[in-house]
Image (cartoon, rainbow, N blue to C red):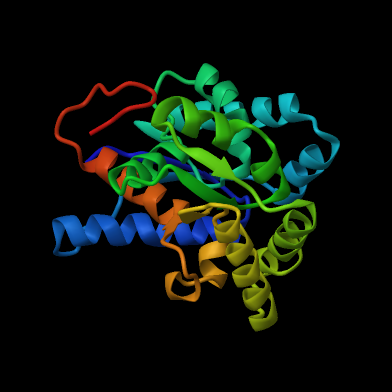
Length: 241
């Protein structure tokens, strides 16, 4: 089993979900008393959120790159960035390390492609929905078009994530509003909905939504488990069995 470096804290609730899913995946695969070999660096979300608000992605990339390098130094064989939004600086993190960064978009893209889906709606923070890293990687690697909600719905989805979910608050009214957003995405031509923020899966369940749903957190965690348990080492920065 290879050791994973979990780069979290964005938020701690979502990092706890990654920790649970990865350990659960290892236990299911290996049985017995097995659990994941993990090293963790948890940042202060307030520091990261301040850089997000000012658009200082360079400083954010430098901060997370330094943290990833520290995890590599103490034995991590790959980095799992336990957040969607900060994959905006994935290239900066990759430049700082000599081990793979398991990118959140790839497991979801592969799952969508297996199902023959070519247009998917994306829910996430405002940054995730508006920055190009999801849209471009999906188009270039998987020929999948990403649709996002309109401006008002993006503001709603973002507000619920920051004001409710990141404080551990699950509100049934917000769930209903999210369902309405997914219906508008379906009307716009989406064939599926991506839960593109770690906390969204804590609010929405697949059976809440008329379209097929793809939880990027669960898929990302499963990919991390596959990497950790792979028998053949030496994978590239972006692909692994």
